[in-house]
Image 1 (cartoon, helix red, strand yellow):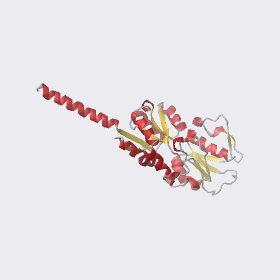
Image 2: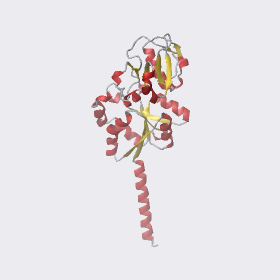
Image 3: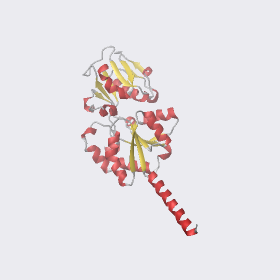
Image 4: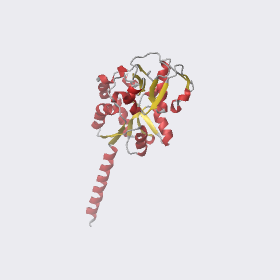
Length: 268
């Protein structure tokens, strides 16, 4: 084979390899659990990224462990479904180093009516469903404490919280731990349900129907999560820029379904 021909083949192969590598760099795969975050990203952030030449793919997961493992392994570039306290607990459980890079609008946890339809002083044995994850059961306990229904230890750690951290329960409330996804369906079987906002809104429950919403707290505002090694990657910086963009702010503030959400500072 003549040298010019061989050289031409080598150049062509290198060009194809470079094109494929660039195309891969411009692919962002994002994982979600049930909730409003996929719609926020798809309608408010993805258009910004697409204009910058990215291709975006969406992956649905049924739980928080799998979607974090997928980020750590590089099967997806990011996930949007969790607050930093839960993220840290999964990191410790799996021995991984995922990190949050930007906060996103988050529906707060709320106390919703089950068998009892009004907020009233609990009778002994009142049953309230709570998430069966330490960090989110801690959030639920804070709501009940704000109502004066229970008291938790001052040194309670959200990442390791359990009902053993409840120091006072004068009304003898029964907290029924259950999977987040089951809580909405279980409302007819309990007196009240303390339900994470994303599971409430994804099941058609309006935030304003809550008998009590949790107080705003930055540590419980959800974040976009990437692998620690990618926190300075170009795609991560572009995702942050997409959330900080005028287009995203216009989308969120222009849609009434986000009323009552916990907003990051960049939207205030």
